[in-house]
Image (cartoon, rainbow, N blue to C red; front, side):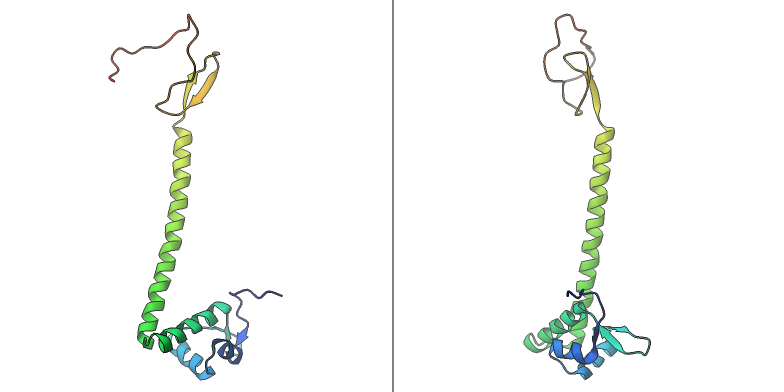
Amino acid sequence: MHISTSAAVYVISVAADLAGMHPQTLRQYDRLGLVIPERTAGRGRRYTGREIAKLRLIQQLSQDEGVNLVGIKKIIDLQNQVDALQSRNEELETEVRSRMSAKEREARVFAAGSAGDVVSISRGRRPQGRPEPGAMVLYNRFRRR
């Protein structure tokens, strides 16, 4: 059975064990706004897999890197901003790609093919093949090259 990382299923004692911390530490992090678990109807805390991973990161930054809790909060806030900006950037790139493909569809040019049929060509391109002898070819003497 696989539990989603976004499912708030871990009670505080289990989350504390998984993160290698004391439950009181999790309560303190909740008060400081570092990790805010979901609440049940009875106000009990429920942690997700992502929040437990965040708790492990907080522990690593605090114990291994020597960063204080205010610094950790700032790091987490900045990471959240980066994640939001990356998500928005992906949305904008998708929108640009869709608009470009729509613009390319609108910019199609049609020409007479060598057999007299209508063919779609890219703007700035000439139809493939030579015109047949006696075929009418349009010429604009005022066109600059």
